[in-house]
Image 1 (tube, rainbow, N blue to C red):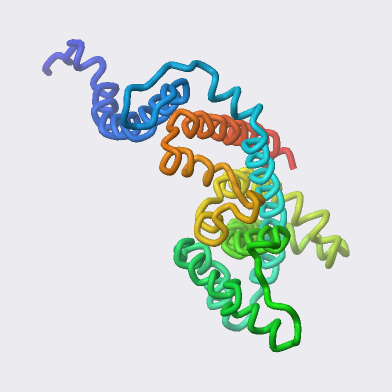
Image 2: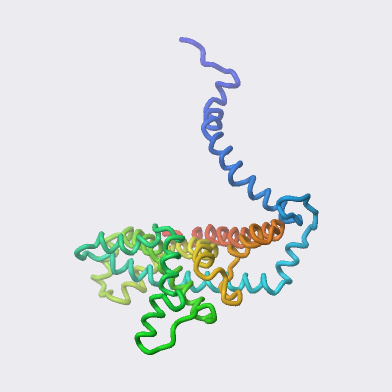
Length: 299
């Protein structure tokens, strides 16, 4: 029998093979994920218009963000939209998932109808939405005029503009919440449900004491991922209101876009993006901690 190879390559063969397999993936991740973040961080310390020589300004862009009333208003708008959209998306998604978890005729069709808005391009849907709220010729204005009411001019009505953006975002986001909750509901053992029914649980008691506790990991996942998604709202605001009226619908993603490509202030845009990254990173860390503390074994 031949002797077993004892060279360096033979001793570490599996490790080397693993690194060879992972190398293209790690390279791709480094080039398209890590490098852009590092470059953005560097630019956030500069005053740069994207063309001329950059000037090092240190933390001035960050100081400006937290001392400028406009940026603070944008941050507050973003948090407001995120919280409201997330709360209603989660609640409506859970209720729809409960309804679609039952055996009814045409169930697959109903599930598809609820999920289609999530798959449809936000840009296309935003353009269609403008048909409904266009002053004078819009569908809503036409209905109001037929009822003898004054036509809708959302450009001078901040409340309606905010409500419309919120409703539009909820409509597009509820499908994902519904899908995740539906997966969680279908993962609950039928034996647990049957045992609860034998003990007399039904209706609200079943939801409160059985369904909701068993869906805690799903709820945490929906909460944090939904917060990340809602915090990055962009297309509806850009294409429907463009941050108007009077900056009341302006959000961080739109402000970053305007700073970079309209105002040619790449340093300020990068600083805003870094701040947003830190907020979303905090949400991700929170997700990991909550997921660990709400494992199924603890329920």
